[in-house]
Amino acid sequence: MEKRNYDLLEVANGKPIKMWTHGVPVESDAKQQLMNTAKMPFIFKHLAVMPDVHLGKGSTIGSVIPTVGAIIPAAVGVDIGCGMIAARTSLMASDLPDNLHPLRSAIEKAVPHGKTFGRRDQGAWQNVPNAADQAWAPLAKRFKAITDKYPKLQNTNNRNHLGTLGTGNHFIEICLDEAQRVWFMLHSGSRGVGNAIGSLFIELAKKDMQQHIANLPDRDLAYFEEGSKHYTDYVEAVAWAQDFAKQNRALMMHAVIEAARKVITKPFEASLEAVNCHHNYVQRERHFGQDVLITRKGAVSAKKGELGIIPGSMGAKSFIVRGLGNEESFCSCSHGAGRSMSRTQAKKQFSVEDQIRATAHVECRKDANVIDEIPMAYKDIDRVMEAQRSLVEVVHTLRQVVCVKG
Image 1 (cartoon, rainbow, N blue to C red):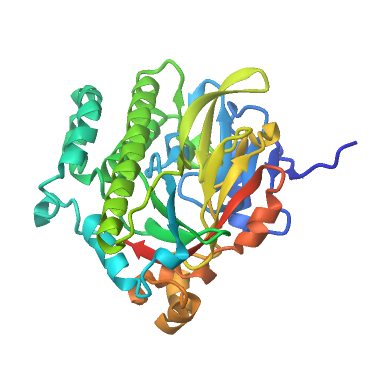
Image 2: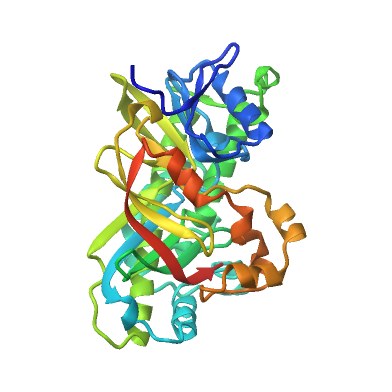
């Protein structure tokens, strides 16, 4: 009999939980959150849990939630369509300048990032570049169909956030692979408009379930039943936000490449290998012979042969992977290393000097505002990768040499 490659957690009055977490610590609060989700009556077969699992708002980060006949907006969350894009170039490490600071500065100027960009009240980023206008055009008609029903979504940062990075754990990196080839990689999602869509429908779900919400294991598990008005509208809005996120990443990648060309004098190709994947989203898929909705909350699709990206923490390794199509995980893998402590705890525990030491080999910000992204605040990426050997195979191992944070 084949050895099971996951740990099984049985849940009283709920579906089982299959956890690819061998050798990786899982906090008790995250386990309880998973068990609450597993008790929902519309969960299909089991929950799948990735090795980067940790407590999240609404639903556990690093979980794959299959549902039939219902959808949980808070499980998808507010960073709808968040994900990664990576491109291998024809450059080698020796083609990069000895001083990488001008390269980081060029990228920081080319890609709006941080809290001030895209805020109309501060007048920043009002003149959206032509490329963003062109990317917005096919999205605009669909967005109007959504805002006609939900007018408050019109008053959001939508088009003027297209092509912008954001804050928190969103980043742009220049990396080297095992053959010293240069890669560009970045992490972002649907920005302000995705947040607004997520927040609106989470509240609508809670309002729709007002009479029944006390019976839920957690208020954030409020859901829409298939066939209801809000269900249909939410599926439409989420699909739009996911397309926005994919376009957002593509625009920024183009800007990064053009910025690099201004600093690196050697001509180069920039899309010899390319991957653009969500890790915070929902879509309809077929598993175990049935059509189901798969919500990946901090997880990546890993169908057989499908390429994905698993980034490590700032200053650690990252991986380009190929899916093995493991049906028990609903063909999924982790979306990163996963936090081992909260941002608040990291800021209390570590200093700027710790950050400088941990990122000595990376050209990046080294100040108090990025301590919460210090590598030690994340799980060991090597253990995370070992725990999911049955889900993906490593195609390329990347190490960062430049990192831009919002």
